[in-house]
Image (cartoon, rainbow, N blue to C red; front, side, top):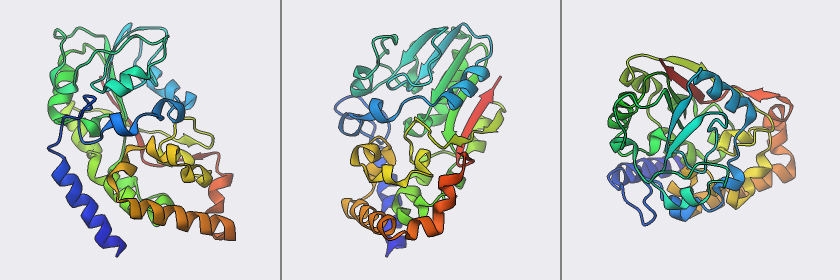
Amino acid sequence: MRQIAALEVRLCLLGRAVISDHEDGSAGDADYGKIGGSYSRFRQPEPAIEKRIWAALGDARTVLNIGAGAGSYEPIDRDVVAVEPSASMREQRAPSRTPAIDASAEDLPFADKQFDASMATFTVHQWRDMLRGLDEMRRVTRGPVVILTCDPDALDHFWLHEYALEVTEAESARYPKIATIAEALGGAEIQHVPIPFNCRDGFNEAYYGRPEQLLVAEARLACSGWSFVPPAAVAHFVSELTRDLSSGEWDRRYGHFRRQAEFDGPLRLIVAS
């Protein structure tokens, strides 16, 4: 039955892939006007990941952040221009951040080679036309193009796959292949990005050793993949995980995650010079 449900999710995603417009302007398949209200509270930049991104930007002074959201991972010591199509996400940007421009990756309103570097974090899977968006990124950038994303082939290396197959299947169907991104950029360095135990950025794998956090509805809502699964599947996950945490079954099977300082999961940093 779980396999059938996962297939239904994939078919649903295929049908929704053509949907590009939402009331708040969100691009792609996720409607951040509905699910993004708690995003900035649960999706804080993780310093260890931030350090890697900033290092990949090199000595760039001008940086374009595409799909910028609330501003996580934007360097604070450089001139940043942010692009974000979702009104809900633009409203969550801190006063210290530059206001984001209402535009999409596929049609960037900038001149050729205008920026020293460009970046995109947890966003390429949201773009209506990723290849066109990557072409646009490359067009407006003189130097490095830096992308933080997830490897869809590594999303099952995590206990969540056992408890919420529908979620990992949905995410796997949405995230583009790492090789496809690298090829579109004309070649790139691929870095595995370890996830620290107390990761402040609340994507699913950030809770690899803190499973109780994924019982918090707002924490799940800050991960767009949960919005693509039926409510019954979410309820099943909450019931199963609550039961196994209470009985100690989760700790018997996966307790070693609580003792891991970091987790080498699906997170990848793609750097094209």
